[in-house]
Amino acid sequence: MEPKQIETQLSWLDEQRRKDNESINRLSEQVLTTEERIASHAKQLQDLSSEISRLAGLTTRIHQMDETLSKQRQDFSRQLGEAEDRRTEKEKALEKIRKIDLEPFAKQLEELRSQIEVMEEFKQALNDRREAEMRITSKIDNLEKMIEDLDAKDETHSRNLVSLGEGRKQDSRRLGELQTETSEILKRIETMRGEHDSTEDRVRRVEVRVTDLVTSDNERREAQTVVLDQQNLKLTGFERNWHEWEQRLAHFEKRAADLDERMLTYEEIYRSMKQMQRELEEVVERLERRINEVTEMQRLADDRMKQEWSSFQADDQKRWNTYKLTADEGWREHDRLHEKIVSQILLLEENVTDILHALSEIRETDQQRVLEIHSLLRDWAAEIEQRTRSGG
Image (cartoon, helix red, strand yellow):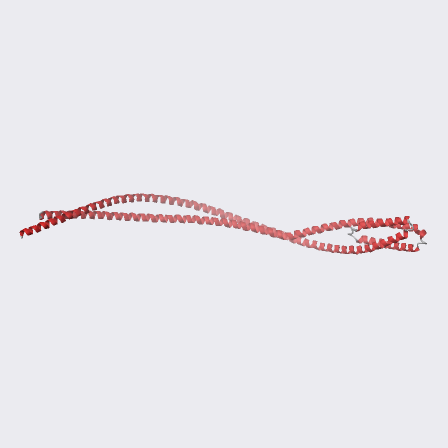
């Protein structure tokens, strides 16, 4: 191969290299432009992401506000429930205190009723005793008449029975004294119920003894002595019973005085209870008015809160609809930009693939040309060396 041909080939190779360099520069510029576009799209994506994050933060704040309002509503409900519970507890406490205050008065009333019933029983017993005493008095009068008759019949035997007559006189005096004492006892004794039967038995025994004296003159002295002894014993027992009944009567009078004092105390307590009841009713009335006022205030607060909540929900719904429309429009714009960017990226990928393929072909062509140039240079060097040897 001659030097001209080699120079021509080298010139052609240089021209091809220059064209390849221009193609590479042009492709590099396209790659840079594509990278700039990708960077701008990435920036737009970043801006969209920041806007989405901001909107997400706004949504979070809206949810937090909803939760805050819900908690506040729950707190209001809880406070209302606690206020209602406290009011119920106060009512129960007042009712309990009222029952505790009224309990001793109720007990005293029951005691007074029982004591009044006892007094009624005493009155009934006294009435029964008066009737029994009247019956006893009539029987004693009959007994005195019978004794007088016996005295008239026994006048014929007075000479033989002087001592007996004197004893009879003494017995008469004793009977008179007994009658006087009995009259006095009848006036003073008010509660002798158990002695009625024994007195009737005593009268019956005296009648039997008098009948025996009438039927049997021989046994009259002994019977009269027995009767007198029995009367003496009975008088002794009667005096003892009289002292016991005096003590009982004094005790009853003392209890009656205590009962009067208790009645006065009860009247004072009853008046104080009435005053306390009126004061308690006034307190309860004021408390009910206060509760009604608090209930009305709470109702007004609930109504105002419901109105504010409804207004807030309406405004929030408007803001949410506006935000939703804006967000939907932004997302649609984002989708359009994303699709556009994706299509551009796909196009760039295709261009890059073509460029890489062209670069690979250029590199293979350059390698092939370099190998050819190397082979030409080696042939050219061998030819020059051969010419040099032949010329020498």
